[in-house]
Length: 303
Image 1 (tube, rainbow, N blue to C red):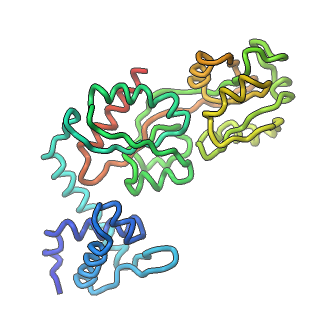
Image 2 (image 1 turned 60 degrees about the vertical axis):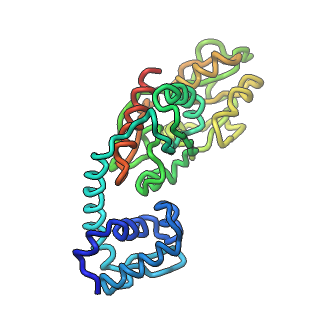
Image 3 (image 1 turned 180 degrees about the vertical axis):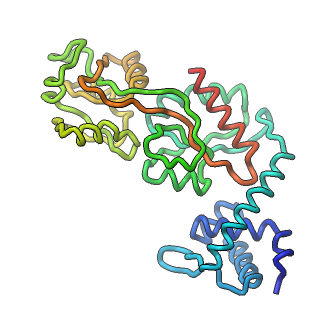
C-alpha cells in the first residue's frame, strides 16, 4: 500500500481526488484539470490503493463519495488550497504578457452595460488575455462559483450565498421604461396607470425577480402581456408599443440615449439592490484571479 506521506508529495493525486469530489464526475474532473479521462481513472485507482477504500461509487447521479471520502475531503481540500496558494505567490501574474482565458458570468444586462468598458480597459491593461462571457443562470451560479467553473460574476446580490467573496460596485434601483411617445403616460406614473397598462416581464432566471417578489407579497397583480427570456430585446419592443417594463435605472438610461424611450419613477416604494462582483478564490491560480477581480472593480467603478 502507498503511504499517506507519499500521497501528500503528489499534489496531482490530491487535485484529482478533490476535483472528482467537487464535480461528482470523472469526465468533468478531467475537463477541469485539462487532462485525459484515463489519467483521472488511473489516479483514482491509485488513490483507492492508498486508502483501501473505493472512495466514490458510480451512480446515476454521478460519483457518490463514501463516508471516508467525505472525511478526507475536508482535510485534503484545505491542504491543497494552502499549498497551491503558497505556490501561486511565487508566480507573479503579468497582465501585459499573459494569454490566460478568464471566464466572467454576466446577465444580458451586464453584457450591454458593462462589457464595452471591460473590453476597452482590457485592450490597454491586458492586451493578450482572452475573455469568455458566460450567460448567467441564477439557479446555477452558486454551483459555478463553488466549483470554480468561472473566475467571477457581476450581478445583483439578492440570490447568491454569502459564503462567497463579494465586493460592491454600486447601488441600483428600479424604474419603469416606456416609449417616449406613449399615448397615455407623461413624466409621472400613477399607481392606477401602472396597474391598468400592459407590461413586459423578464424571466427570473436573470436574477431580477425583486419586482415580482414585491408585487406578489403586496398582493398587487399587473396586466402582463409579454414574457421574454432576456432584457436585450426590450428597446425595440418597448419603443414600438405602449407596453411598460420595470428594469434597473442605469440600463434604462442607456437605452433611452439610444432609442425613443423614456423612464419614470415607480409609483410604489420598492427596495433597491446592490450590484457587485462575486467570486471564490481559486486554488493554484489566485494571483491571476485576484488581478482580474481587482481589474473588474476598478474598471466598473470608473464607469
